[in-house]
Length: 148
Image (cartoon, rainbow, N blue to C red; front, side, top):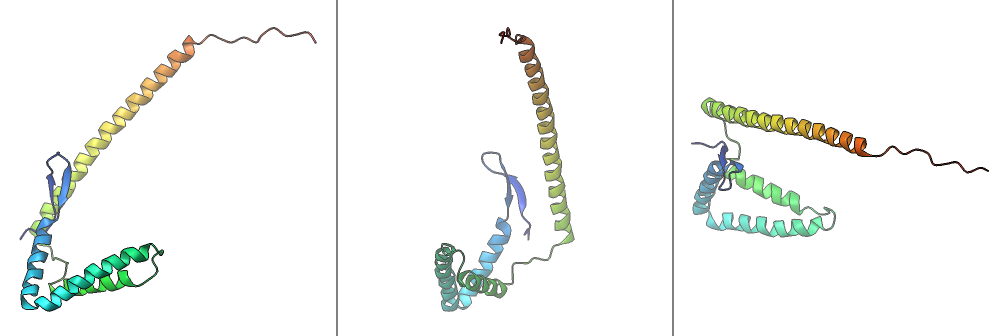
């Protein structure tokens, strides 16, 4: 099972870290739990939805209330019922993740290098333009003094 997020490009070419494999596994386990106890799981999901609305209302009161803590506790219990959300990593998968992370770091460094070079070019062009502007300005001399 590939449960680590994978790096891919979306339709517009942007990089995306896709965690769909882990989510599909969790949803499958939730469906199995629902098959065993539809009424209990259904009630928990309704409670989570109701508490979400209450959490949003409490945020308007600067976080006063316990709805978020209650919702998080129910979600945590449900996650534990379906095997938790922690996955033990296979060393082979670790290697794949490490390779992806190194690839991301390499691409980020290339982008940073190009940006740094462009910033240096813009700084040099700005200095040249500033020098040319100042050379083109007439030298202002003090005006005649009035006898006083």
